[in-house]
Image (cartoon, rainbow, N blue to C red; front, side, top):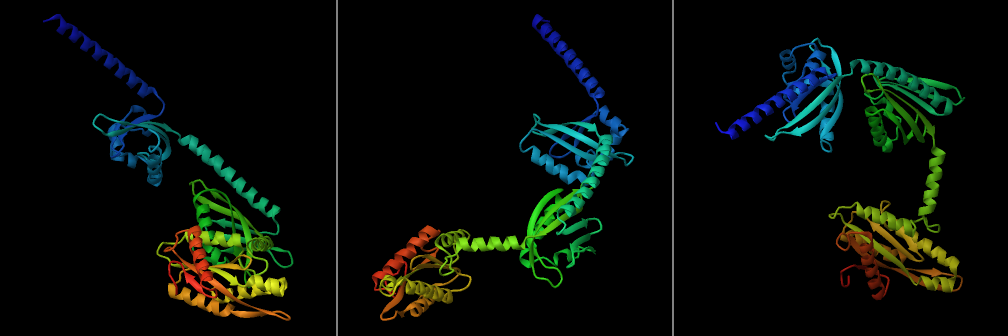
Length: 452
């Protein structure tokens, strides 16, 4: 036998001894470490390996454990936690090669065991993916946490409830028991005395929503749905009317709380009457958006509303943008005076408002120029509205000794044929208006047409 073969044989034997020593050390570490170790196939969930520490937690042998969980990590996790754990694993491995979880497992004696689960995923030579997991029994720790959490929640709920009542004594107070589906509502009567009213089947029967304004119902239901999913605080504004009363605006501050089972068991809230505040906001908004002389939208508001409306429109929609100019208006001011000029502007504005629909956007762009966005219309209807407006405006404005004949010139462009955004459509309608004026005024022109 050659020396080379002998040396290679000795080297192989040395490597075998080192491998055995390493394996023995690893087994010692696995058997002595607190908690347990498990490996399982990341794609199939099949349990591949469990160590002695994990078997000790369950108090059974390996064969019993495998049979109990049918060799499946999915069955290892308690049924109520499986969906949540699956979603957490999928979310974490999108960004990391390790996951950290906490879940329950059912032992062989039907006892619930809480595990802290830390795992790393590795791809094997055959392409399979395997999770290497370290599991720690945290059942006692969880029991203590739940007890403390329950005490804190109870204290917090009672504190919040009476704090809200104390701080907002004039408010409408709510206290919802989720398990009983019972809502307690408190409000003052006309003499200032506070009364509590209990509503059974509050949400399953829809009783709690009957006082909400129909236009605000979807918002309130959405907020309530969020409060029932996740514990926390929030604010929502809505209109509400009690028996025989008119709708008033309220701002509701609410808080929802979890119970031992980590689901929402209580929602409390305090609703303040903010009707005066809302009316003032509306007054200020109207002042900011409206032309003081005519009550129509001003130039800035008209541009913003038109741009927003067009941006939300489908290319198959047909909207008509009208640019309207009052013919001979300068002569009215110069000949009859600015007071008659102001009356003329209001006359034109009133006729534009009467010719078009309440749902159409109508604005004064400054001076004697107006704009209308007529949504969801047709070429024929747009022509009809333009002709009707020409006929209405055509008139003589009279002063004390003289009169001035006025009319209007109109340019029309269509979304999306002539423009897919406000600026493009405005330029097209303005070009059509220029053509109408060049054609002798007192007429309308449609962008892209030569004549009428």
